[in-house]
Image (cartoon, rainbow, N blue to C red; front, top):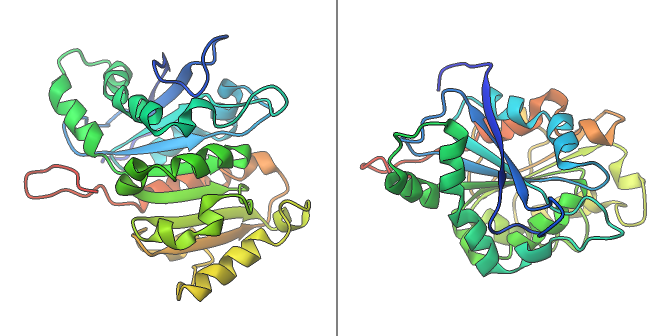
Length: 274
């Protein structure tokens, strides 16, 4: 894709949200102005954390800017999930594979809304969206959703990469069985240098996951920049010297770097392959 500084963004009403009612059934979508839905593309699913509204998290993580900066044919989708640990259960209805499949199935219509092009061949777009490779990215409490959807076979089948930012706990499927992730996609962990010392639930988690990876004969890179491409079997565990939890995704454009290093693969007919 050509270099761009412009993004197309929209917020849509979901038919298959994680939570229903009270304005919670929404998702933020973004793509570069040059996004071409007539060609194969990837879908980045970003699962946010607690304490701030969806709109605030979109801004804090610079999601629109980062999908532009990756310079690849991508649509980024950030569904509104749980923002309050005290009153909401996370991951909500996304724990049901059929419901999550419905969420993925409705994305083509939302993508058409995003690109604002009434001339699009909706049937062709649905096919390309259904074949799109998935990048699962999560921040902080978004680990609950990411861990759950990673258990869905339909996600594993299409997985290109899993990237977690200050978001690693021993309850996570990708902590317990990183080898299952690496069979189909890359695994990328980015955390503040202090993260593993901030509490009992976080203590030494990255150190222990690195040991698990080494036990699988996978030596993780210590930097996204040091990896040529993110492919199945590739792992990155990057420690960042910043203070703010809320900067871990946007700092250094790290989400954009992850997206940029995942190929949008095509076959001879130009269709995406997982």
